Length: 66
Image 1: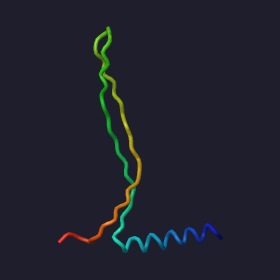
Image 2: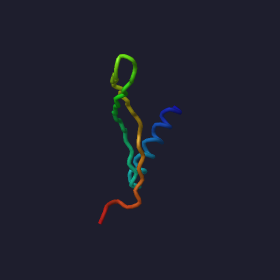
Image 3: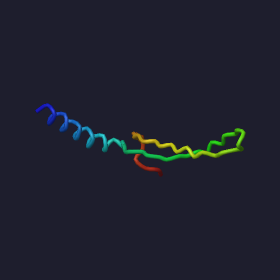
Image 4: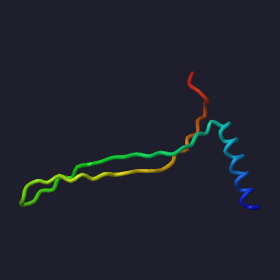
């Protein structure tokens, strides 16, 4: 019963928050770099990927630009 109440409260909060110019959503990204190592054999390049996953929450005081 408690889980149902919490879920209902969350849904009501999300609908009321939407009316207040609030937006939220997922964010994902990918980046990379090349690392060049110098040693006796010469220079070697190695690829290094990077990932980011998160969320965003944006509140706007105005609903549109004029």
